[in-house]
Image 1 (tube, helix red, strand yellow):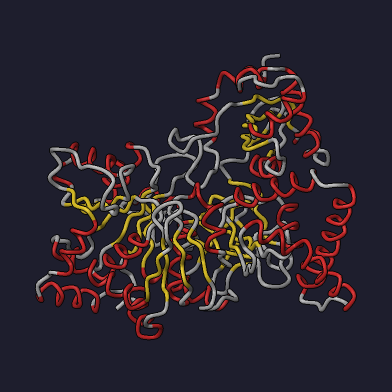
Image 2: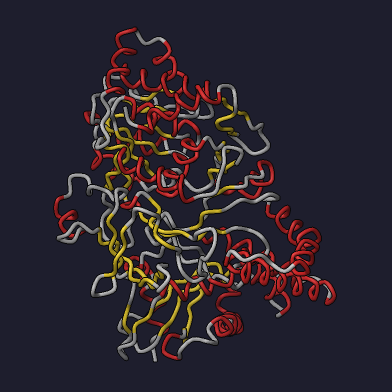
Length: 603
């Protein structure tokens, strides 16, 4: 029996009626808790239901849904049948959905609600012989298509498991007992900034190794409460949820990411996986709040941040005891300012917040640490079962992505690429020998595709995705992600894509924060003007350019953005402009905005 499969039953015996997870379907709804005993029963029922549907060992299921406990229940049920699960982002296009489900050969498809059901239905219509059953997690609120003979709702699926004859109960127990560490558990398709998605095989052995490493490295307990905010189709949230189950940490499952500002205040998690965009928005909101304060209040905040930095960065970070006077003054500012800030965010008793997926600016990281919010910067990939490195509790260095976890071997290739060898590294891509041949060195190291270096203290510094690094016509290398993360500090800028490959100078496509920009526009006499008019006004371009110049003051001249084009809408996952983790897909953006880009280089 594999450890991850065994976890739920073991925790049910240990914790019994204690809460395992909580969930709320809708805004203003009630959060309902489920015990470990109930959770174990649910996964056993799902396993028997899958067996009743005729699944075989080594088959796959696909799961396309917003976050819901049923994802975990269905996946653990699949594991008990020695099957692998394929997570599909709930916002996937039909083309993306079809490719992943077909490539992963999933015959059973789970979908969340009326938004994902059409994806599965249309796939079945095109390939009726490839789909045995579609199961919809939501039991009401939509209608099946009239000719749909393959779909059922979750309650019907559960009923199958509840009424399963004894032979299917025995079959599941047999399969569970025969599970091997090398059995695939997850096929997670990389969204990739270039090329077609590839199915990363994550085995039970990969998960077992990742759980063991994190149990040793992280200071958490079964008294903690984690919010599942990132999509469970994201490797960081996927692996983190499994870690929470392994540690006995309660999970509050956030269904709609757009409502996180509401749910975080209802739940008050002290653990939550985040991407940098979350902290960028928090930072922008705090800066706006400070800007509206009186001069005396701003001076108080400035002093508080100075003290917070001295205490948390100069002493606590280095494992040193802060002087008594400093500790006393910090306690005062924590009580009068920092605690109010943490309450305003919705995390009054924070433990730590693993953050990865893209660069977070050093300034924002230092700010959060100074006010007592443990933003734990890390680095990893789907192919490494998430974490390669992260900040240790002490002696971490801001500007790095921490040190490799014990048991993970990292080296830098001659051309600056980060290479990884570890028991958490995937055995390869699903049925893709060409990609596998390219992904590993002759001595078994995985090529991450990230450029970086290792500092004297063993910390990893990321410089850029190898494929994203570009050279200007003057022969200077530019790391666009680094600059884009700095731009995100500014409250008037929502998103940016830096341009300059083989160009004379660097430019950027900028998506402004329209709510902030409209407030500025009103003061400039553009009250009531529509977005197109505001963005077309030369004053707006000059104003945003001024904001950018402030951010890049300390940069080399060749690195600086010289011109910009303002865009009215965010880069879209659906259109393929960004990945599901909000990394810019530069070839797609270059094609889609070719006219705007050429205009920036017109003279």
